[in-house]
Length: 253
Image (cartoon, rainbow, N blue to C red; front, side, top):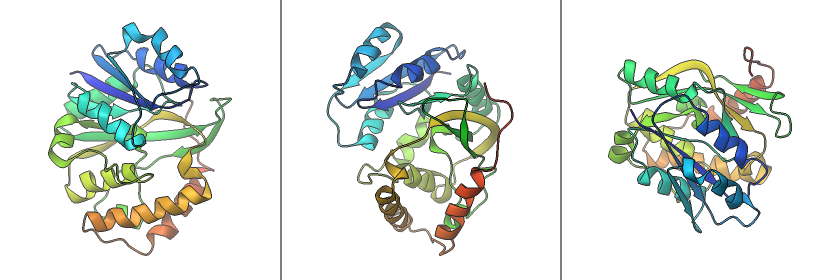
């Protein structure tokens, strides 16, 4: 089955080449790689163009934000299973995409997810956090349980049926999408206990202002989907993040 990987980027010349190489090195035989660039001016496009003959589609134009850009890529994809990989992140190894595709197909799933590590931007061997979400249980979202979105692989038909990212949200649209698909619509999903993505530290949602806005959007996400939000959510979520600082995965290349 064809797997479509979408990378959204803007002025990220420092790391985009590692992301591209990570996708192009995958051993799955049918990968459609789509890059959506917001009109970079720092040399990002020059790097992308070096690999243009190996990339299925490059879209470079202004957008309304990261989730609008992601939707462009997802909607233009032709794969049966879709995933997104940020422009400063990489897959854990060359077999990641194939293993996720096989896991979904062999188990008759709509989607699957796995573990993620946060690594130092300058030294990707330095693990800062280990996000091990574990198995989803009904009602888990309202108590602070969250999926590491970059590890999420999902059949395109699910997006077409239940919708893409809500681009009216600036920070928590990935959370809202997971909440809507998994908690509200009960898609068939399972967890693979394996590090799927190495994510570089940093990002808008990690600063205080972004965290406050993100929490407001999380509350809005529950309201939009008519789901109950436990008051314990904002207690459990930071506790989970703190525990991730002390956990460590097995050997990572």
